[in-house]
Amino acid sequence: MTKEQSKIMCAAALREPTGKVSCLGPDGSYSQIAAMRMCEDFEIILCHSFSDAVHRLLAGETDYAVLPVENSLNGGVLESLDLLEEKDIFAVEEFPLAVDHRLATLLGVRPDEVDRIYSHDQALMQCSDYLNRTYPNAALIRTASTAESLEKLDAHSAGIVGAHVLREGVVLSKENIADNKGNFTRFLLVTRRGKLPESSSMVFFSAVCEEDRPGSLLGLLKIFLRYGLNLTRIESRPVKNEFGKYRFFIEFAGDLASDRVRRALAEAERYCAQFKLLGAYN
Image 1 (cartoon, one colour):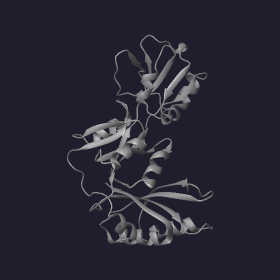
Image 2 (cartoon, rainbow, N blue to C red):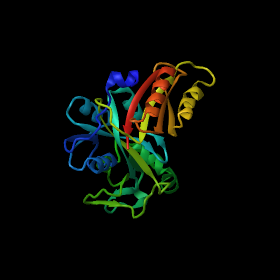
Image 3 (spheres, helix red, strand yellow):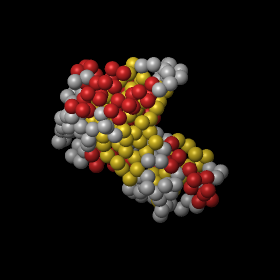
């Protein structure tokens, strides 16, 4: 067991059959759909931000929270990565959700009347080609979630929401308007830190290399090469208040019950100035 594992005693091995789960709202958000799929019998608590969803988890108001961590078009969801790093939470399950973006307008609004388009910034980016081609002069305005854009609709605006959204008086486009129709967002189910899961197929951690020198990241990655572990994802984020230094978020295929995985993690922790196990899931 590594120092990190000993210190945090990490996340619950098995998910409770019922309880409460917090996620980004309002009603109809993609996060809500992911929460419903992962926690079918749970009470879902809709929150105004990802940070609020995690706060409710840490305050004991919910048993789990749902966070989007990666989109197949736009990469990592930076706010969620920062929350995983900064808060005392641990990912225990992942779920890929197909994203089907539709343009939403009030009944009777003509396309040439739309001068504002509202949605979450991820949705705006994922539909940028369509928006530039169809609404080149429209103002693009960020909302906290795709579902929130419905609250902004008037005679001169549109929103981007999921195809699952049904609301009286709102018309959705017949086709998916995303630039890439094979669009997925990966969600993680997170909980407060506790006992390590007994097994996993994926392990997720963050690391800051010990020295800022040529080859320092390569040295970290070679540890996993020596143990024959397949890295499936690597992403960097600036270390806050330390200009020019970066934190790496790394995921690899492995079972925490495996001695090979435990030894690789222990060696990686010794190599790094900062190391944090963020999740283990199937």
